[in-house]
Amino acid sequence: MTKNEFKIHFFREQIPTFSCTPGCHDCCGPVTASSEEVARLPIKTDAEHDTALAELTCPYLGENGCEVYDDRPLICRLYGTTPSMLCPHEKKPEQMIDSRIERKIHDFHAQTRQILL
Ligand code: SF4
Ligand code: SF4
Image 1: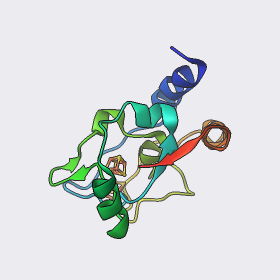
Image 2: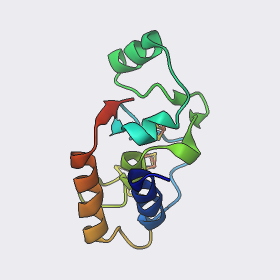
Image 3: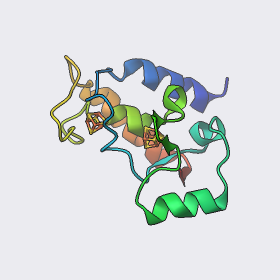
Image 4: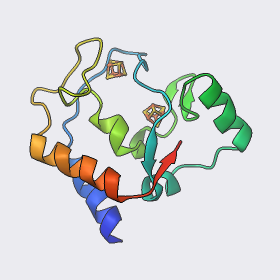
């Protein structure tokens, strides 16, 4: 496991989870993720990427929701767990993310090559 893969694993464990409104994907859209996270995802064609971007959505959002849920990037996991990314439907975990961990995740994003999904 590389150092960045270890960090991703650590951050995943630290981000609190919660239940969304069933069937809701309102926070899915064009997102960026580190190259290590993107490398785990199935490859989409340029046409699929272009179509998703033109519709301001994510190429991994399928009819039944996120097609890569178990491997969704940190930014998707972070959504709704911090006051800086509140769910519009007021869904949230019992305890919001520790602000120190959130800072570390943002630092990680700033230090790694980010790729648009
Ligand atoms: S975090 Fe909120 S907006 Fe995003 S999918 Fe869950 S319920 Fe919907
Ligand atoms: S990877 Fe999944 S959770 Fe993240 S924006 Fe795309 S469809 Fe939504």
